[in-house]
Length: 340
Ligand code: TXD
Figure 1 (cartoon, helix red, strand yellow):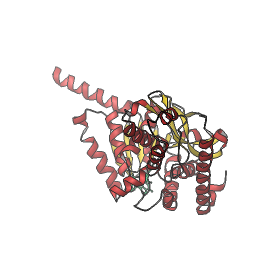
Figure 2 (figure 1 turned 120 degrees about the horizontal axis):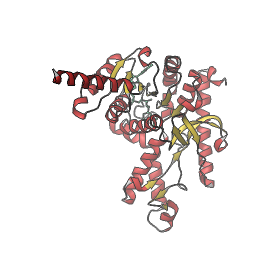
Figure 3 (figure 1 turned 90 degrees about the vertical axis):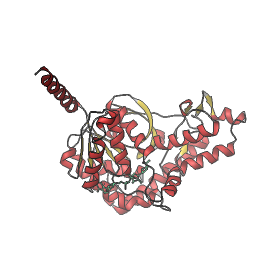
Figure 4 (figure 1 turned 60 degrees about the vertical axis):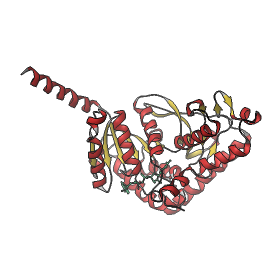
């Protein structure tokens, strides 16, 4: 009798534990969405609802990950669906719905298709989860996250784009290989638009406490080699698309999205490079672009203005212009995006 009672109370505890957990809805259950679900489950960040128009993909991946819970010992619920009602009252929503690039396609080529998709997603989440922290990953990122905020009407500090963490992580990784040093000894930032004009902030990059400029002056790395690394970072996505042939990068993008969600859910107040809404910071108004932000329980809590060298200012402004140009193309596709 006692054993039965103990088992029953353990089951009740486990169920109550699940009920207490945050709710994270993933809109898009593809390569990144499935990886997000797995990482969130392993970290027990919250209960997962995997949403996709291809309902079978969402249900299959949710069930597959759930079946690994006894192996890895996590206790979260996972559900697959194609019904937005199931995503109701989410604490965090991470959006990857859209089509990825094919070899030879630029991120911008995805604009027309993914703009239509993000409108559907915005309609689906704005009423059911008005207070969620929404992380957008779908490309072309800076314009899609701005369209998402416009279409959904959700608060600007609760709608943010993931790209800078990924770009910075790629730059950091390439630098660590070049200098034969662990990535955790490197502090760097890649800002601006998530495209060919992204800007690696050399001035604010530190390697083992030393500035990159010091390393160049002491011959540890040549300017030419550094420029090659910056170019490889800009082409980081295309390099993987070329290898995969079908689909694009998904492990590092998913890990980057989870870092943002965790900083929000645990109020970690991490400073992370993300696509955030600028209201005059960096001289930019009324546009989403990649800048360092503090993410805590209130969403994007502060935009950090780092000092830029003259060259970085020129390159950052070029990147902002590229985002503005692409947003104008989005407004041509859907004029409602032009209204404040
Ligand atoms: O740093 C970044 N932000 C980028 C973003 C890094 C890598 C990939 N980047 C972009 O993320 C990529 O160019 C795509 O636009 C998205 C998602 O990439 P992923 O590799 O996950 O694409 P998949 O595997 O094709 O998954 C997309 C899913 C797929 O299962 C579709 O059925 C689903 O999106 N989909 C939808 N879900 C919900 N609602 C609608 N309308 C919809 N349309 C498609």
